[in-house]
Length: 234
Image (tube, rainbow, N blue to C red):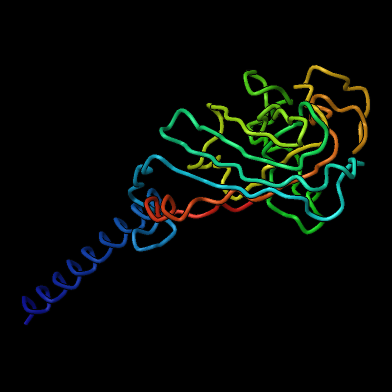
């Protein structure tokens, strides 16, 4: 009888130890790696499928922001982004009705919020906390694309290639806004003596003036299906 009870006690202790070890192992794994059954953790991240393409249709939204000229309130057109590899993004634009001849600031802004016209799109997209500059500068915002050149008819077509603008990953510009301004961007080399919407703020805005056209950059349907991805949150 005593031997039988001793065997039963040993069996219970063994079962308890087994359960304890399982719980400890589970706790350790979850502490280190997270819950393997949780949707919040991805064990593998698929490499993006290049090329990735995004499109943006820009136009005037609400009142021209920042005291722009009324002649420039019909700027419309398309901006296309193509990222063929991890290291480069090619941008092309075809715009009409953009007002006065010459240079016009051209940027990616932080948000695609147009609830108060282009003004509510926020500042230049600047995730690394840099000062404003030109697209070839080391010190610049990610969203600094320099200037477009508008001809006598108010039209502009052109291309540029950029190494900071991305269409995938944490700093993707998809879901943000593209902005055309009324005045030239001084590329951070101009007057920076004032603050405020109409002040001299070369190091933040390039003194590019009013926001005459804007739109949201959206991943093309084919590219989105290939990457199973959508716009990033603001």
